[in-house]
Image 1 (cartoon, rainbow, N blue to C red):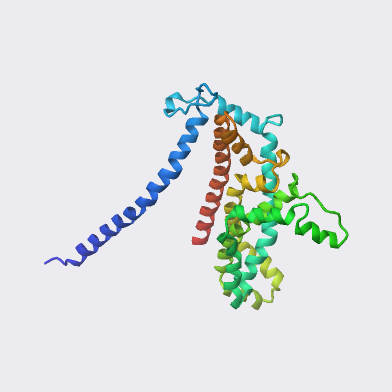
Image 2: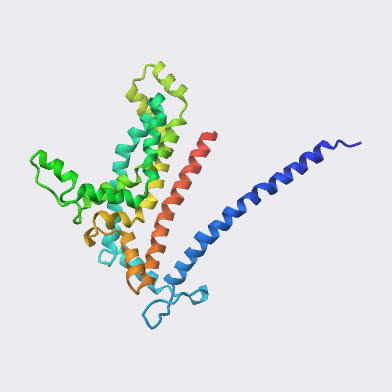
Length: 308
């Protein structure tokens, strides 16, 4: 008489294989409804070849009706030095780069201390790091306006040392970069903290047992082991930062500091040339997708190396 146990086990395996896809269905429908459909709508506007009486593009919902002339013009004007949007793209790259440098300079020591040295204070520090997420981002940026306005606390503090007041909110690139770094710093610290916290303490102890100093242990053990966490933190921070527009609008509002996100907002919300704004959205998505794929390749390489 055959043993019924394998049949029960195989039935349980089949039920398990059906359970997880079923649980994933709501999230899949959610992504389709709130990502794929809106993104397709943007493509329908970007590749539209018709306009209405108000000179606004009529979405081309059928791919057979798509025209690439507007999108090609957007690419040309973005990546040629004399293009209309070239300066905006360069400014976005520069601002994002320096904001990421500030995030690394501030965020890595904070994440390292919290993960390796905080001890009983770890919970309190994590709560303080996460506290900005409890407040709306725009509200936090408006607090910067109160701090940096001409009669704000920063200029008052500078006056105590005899330093003349500065117009921080009048198109200052310095203000925009620091505001971006401040706004996205928690996004950088949390994944980096998780990576540093997973480092096996025995590796660090073995390094010290071999007579290696703290600085060399950090450079040759901690830093290499946290490399993927650092890259993850940079990607998570850079992706939303590159498309940011409200930070610049709040702390500057000047065309001299506008980024790609501000240019997209201008075309989509304040003018009839919505097909150009949609083209900029697609181009920004392609640029960010390139870096995302590169990050996924690095992740796969790291996983293969770790499994060896």
